[in-house]
Structures are given as C-alpha cells and as structure tokens.
Length: 314
Image (tube, rainbow, N blue to C red; front, side, top):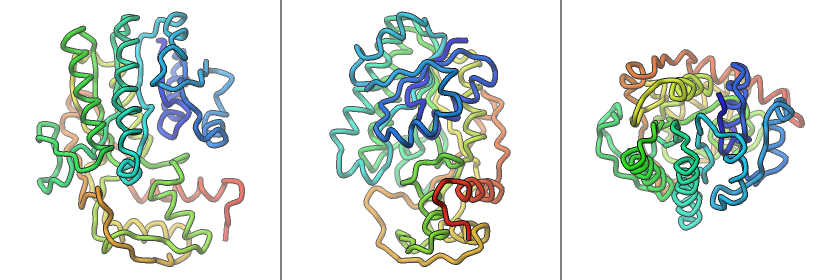
C-alpha cells in the first residue's frame, strides 16, 4: 500500500511512519520541519526508507508532485498547529493551517482519487462537557480556537465524503503520550522538570483529569482505520480511564526517584476539567483494544527520557 503521512516527522507521525514501514507499506512524508533538529531526530531511524517532502500543507503546489508520482492508496493527515493555549494567542494561524491546510490536502486527494483519508482530530472538541465518558454522538461545543479548528476539519471531511464518496475516518485522540512526545506537552515537561530539579508549574488545584493514551494504542487505531472499509465515521481513541493531574505527577516522581518542586498557577483559559473517552465504537468498528496502562507508559517514557542526550540521570 502507498501511504502519505502529513506531519510524518512529528511525534505521532514518526511513529505512524515506522509502523507502516514495519508492514512493508511504501511511505511518503510531508512535513514543514518547523523545528528542524527535533523533526530530523524523530525521523532519523527511517529517513533512508521513506520519501520526504519538506512542504507547508497550505501550499499544495509544493507537494503536488508526490501525488502525481505515487498515486496514494491512503492519506493519514496529522499535520496541524497543535495546542489549546497557544491557539488562544494565534487563532488566525490555527485556522489557516488546520482548516485551510486540511482543505488543501482534501482537494489533492479528490483530484488524484485517493479514496482513504484518516484525519487526526482531538478530544478537545468536546469542550467542558461534564457528561462522561464522551461519546461521538455528543454535540461538541469547543472552548478554544484549536478545538474549533479540529471540529471544522471534521466538517470538511464529511463534506468530501458526501460529495465525492471518499472513505474518511476522523479519529479524536485523547492526550497522546510516549517516546518522542513534543517537549511542550505535560508528561514531557513534567519529566524534564523533575529529573533536572527545576520548578514544575501546575495549573489549577491538581484535580483535573485526563484520559492519557499511549502512542502504541493510538497506532492500533490508525492502522485499523487505514485497513478497514468504512465510509465515514468519527471515532474516539483513548484508554477510557482518567488520571488526576496530581496522580500523574506522583507516577513520574516514582519513576524518576525525585520529588517535584511544584509551583501552583491559576487555571488557564481553554483548559477543560476532564477528558474521558467512550471507546465502544472504536472497539466495534476498529477492533481497538488499548493495552498500555498509564503506570507502564510512564515507566517507559521516563526510561526513554533518561536516555536522551543531555538528560540528568540522577
């Protein structure tokens, strides 16, 4: 199978690329390499086995040639501006990349008759709903520009399915973590702060809860979405277990063998009190069955982090 992965040098994308190569798919990566050192490190182990195109998804002319040459069987669209808090500061950029950029990729798929499209959405679309666990048939009500752009992307996906018959699955990811997680995300930031004896900023009173999902389990859902014949669906991918923020810090402290130097900060605009996935649909349609507990996942992450260049190992 010939597969294009947008954002393929990112955290999730690089893992998807490795998984596709392990089953002998032919893979093309489109990525803007906005952080060249980080992105090149993510993809370094497989760089000689994939076709890499440095391009901005908002500029289709810059990667149109790879559609002409490869005639992809599937596109996994992961490229995006990520993060709730930064989206509040730069909402127009988020709309440009996550909405306009997504439509640019969909248009190329339509033109070159790529019939399978997997779109990376987010649990953030559920907003501050307190009815848990979150089901896909809930009416989403985003409370951040990032969440709104992801919901808009889902809407565009449905349009292209409806008008052009494309098979599209929108996967709502719930707080993905694991090796190569972006440095700005909580588990990476917390681990670094604890191991380096630096202050750890905790927003709110520590009782917010998240459904943390290990990258290995996310890969299950993405690969199944590529392979299964499904016309159009929106599907949650989570662990279906919530972990309190202060419990998460405790798990990292245990694996690091150090105590956190916690600095309390107020709740941030756009943050939600809880995310919690109902994964019954994913189990039914994708055969999804998450395997990595938060305890095992944190142990693996701290071990990975200790092995990174320049990391304190004490």
